[in-house]
Image 1 (cartoon, helix red, strand yellow):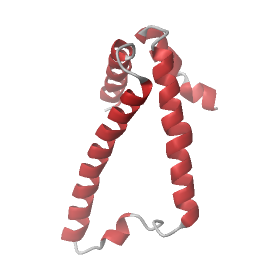
Image 2 (image 1 turned 180 degrees about the horizontal axis):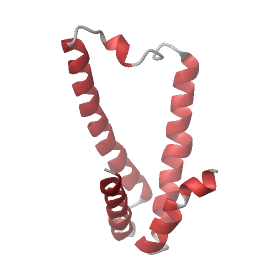
Image 3 (image 1 turned 90 degrees about the horizontal axis):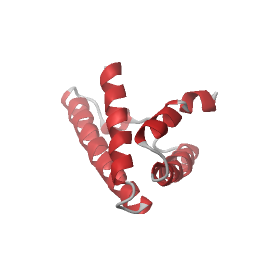
Image 4 (image 1 turned 60 degrees about the horizontal axis):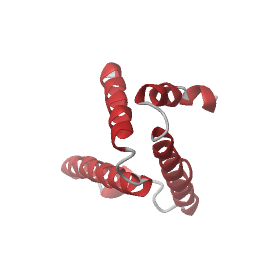
Amino acid sequence: MILLGALSWSAYIFRTSQIANKYSELDLQFTKTAILAGMYGIWFLFEALSTLKSGGTLLQLWSGFQSIPVWILLAYSAVGPGAIADLLQQQGQKEVTASESNIILCMESIFAA
């Protein structure tokens, strides 16, 4: 699974580098977000059906949904490190090759430490 994840990440970086000059950052970000929202929606649907089938309730899927601080943190992480970082990444991938951007992005954990 780790190798499959690494392969998927490299394919994503390579493909993004190929199309970065053809589309605006906002168009790429919107498309990526829409695809991920669809995938997460399908995942949620399967989880909800599984929970309901086993006699549970939908409230069991996320116990913190009524917490205002949780929603604030969720919104911050989506806008700050999420969307803005992706826009900057796509802008940067217009300037460097796929190999260079892959090396830089793989060092993310080092920068975060």
